[in-house]
Length: 87
Image (cartoon, rainbow, N blue to C red; front, side, top):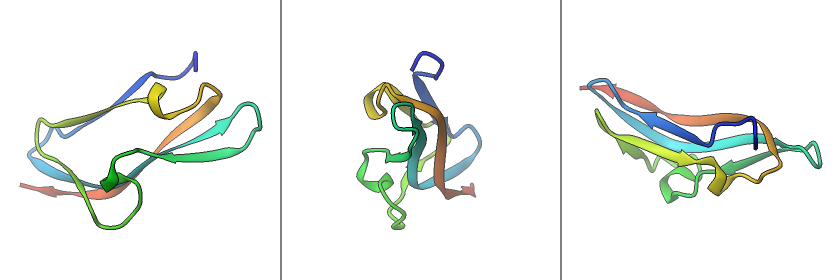
């Protein structure tokens, strides 16, 4: 956990609406070398099901990685499914 960011912020800065369908982190467990995936623990973001979490202009979602990933996580990648719509 020493080399990774502690927080990730997803922010809608432009005049558009972001529709997030799922959000997960894929990481390698340094103890087992296995690739694992953990979904963000918000009902709308735990699977691709067309139940969207919306972000409007100037809104953001901040994620504390310490709360959802183990200390043994490395090579972390963010995986997002969704789309945006211009206003």
